[in-house]
Length: 114
Figure 1 (cartoon, rainbow, N blue to C red):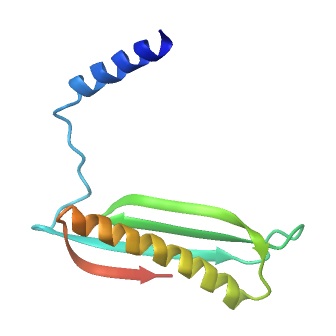
Figure 2: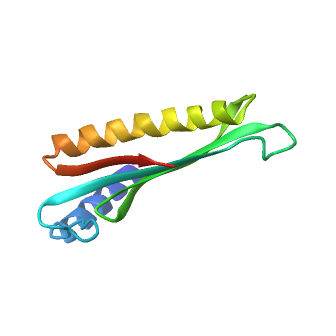
């Protein structure tokens, strides 16, 4: 009964919000910019020296993806920490680019900056 009640609630919500739209920032003609930033925080936690890697991405001025995670590995240099953070952000950027392309959005710029 609990599942049926929840399903009815969801269907009622969907019916009531069928005309709602998701708007991503200010749209410049019909183009979108996918912009990403990444960073790493190497050895800031003196108790275990674990890496924290972070990234954010926005499309047309609206934040669409972000992450900040502490790694389970210990890195030995700043360069290694940046490489791991960069690789993680690049995987997400490629996935977002593919998704937006499949949704027929015309991407005018693909930047990945620190």
